[in-house]
Length: 330
Length: 302
Image (cartoon, rainbow over all chains, first blue to last red; front, side):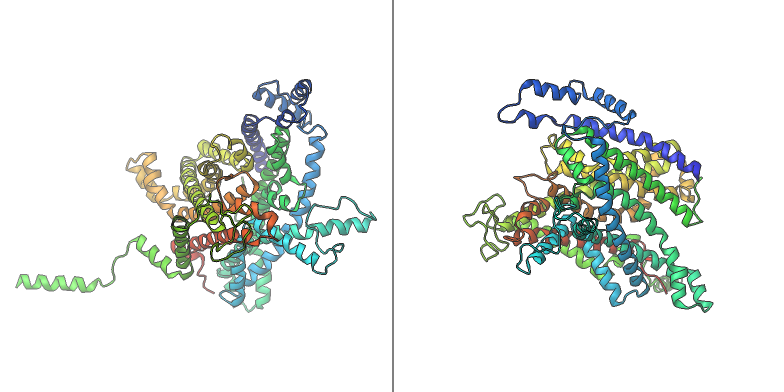
């Protein structure tokens, strides 16, 4: 299994290189990163523009710029950002932390919801509970993330205004933390950050929960219909014990792999939730770097997000092998 | 005498086969029709298409028309209200519906055709070819749609087809994985061996034997892809990387209404409800099709 894992990780290196090359080629050739400097009023002196171009290696053809980037990367540098004040290395890790905070909590919430809902729906198939869970699963599956997020945000604002006092608020609807705190004690900081998390995590969790609960329901149904469950019941084991010890354990296996893969996808892609709630996370970084044609920042995003996708796909496959002894990797 | 006997025999045979022979397609259609929710969803979806195209043609305002009534709440003259400039919101939503459905169907078509060819080739040839094609799938899956859409925005002038092509090609990588999995298990079966023994070419085996046998998962996948396409397109348009002004898409409409949820809620809710309606009906159709192709999956005996 270790040999298999190492082989998979080695294969992923050329995969990351090829996709970074493709994205670099596309973005480097599709716009001018110094556009903003050229249209300022009063006009930016040409020497400044020339210096900026030099700093960003724009005097080289794009494929040479890619090579320069690879060289920088070899020395642990992600390269110069279009934004002079920004250091890509520190920026990307800070943002990864912000996104992780959002995604981890949202996934945990979604996971608990999905398992409870999915298992209940399967055990009581074709009951009212089942239909309710199925209905909401399908509804959230069909709801656009951005629409739900705006809806929750507006609901939050309405609830904040309900008591007529503009100073008080229950929900924070913008940013991942307050810019300024009156009394920055440890506890105040914590509640401030937690308060900012409520709406974004709930909206992300509801969307994620939808497909997971469907998934959990069908895997639980499959297990409940299998012979060994019938045997367990025939032996006279209590139903509750059969459910928790025999059925649930097996039925959780498929969800673990789905969780691992979806988690990886969300790290680079909680784009919409971050945009609407104004979180400076990875998704915002992707949008910002694409719109400003900040190709080195985009490359840093791609490497981090891509590496996580590769890693978690591998973890998903390995987990499957560990949890289900019928599957072996060699 | 012999003649009489013959007629009797014939009558016997007719009587014997009262159970009609049913084709595979027939069975699937019957099973699908039994799924009431799926049939209702299919009708809803078809109605939505009719409303999007027929309604837009019949409605008195075009989506580009600017009426003197701006920021009007829903009324008889403007059932969905108007926006800040004076566009009739119903005309805009209908146009958005057309664009979004068109893109979603094209996404499903592109992703299915490319993904099936890709996956079937990889699964059938195995080894080197498989390895290469699946690593290519890994590469494509990592590509961020936003970056690709932004880079190609200037190429296709942001037309609906460019957007469909981008989403479709990116989605085809995951389709190829699904189809590859199915083909891998089919490849080892006897009828493929038999076809090979008869001297069928690789292309013939893939096109005549493997692809038709993946039809079940393929059609279900294509249906789900329509829903994926709608959600991906509206999300891209919402973020400003999809359909652009002056054209209209449901996602773009929601983007423009984001700042006015409080003051002009009709602009925000109407496109959203249509996205949900389409995606919901597509998902139910997909569910019905899945049951029709593979009844084992849902009817579990307890």
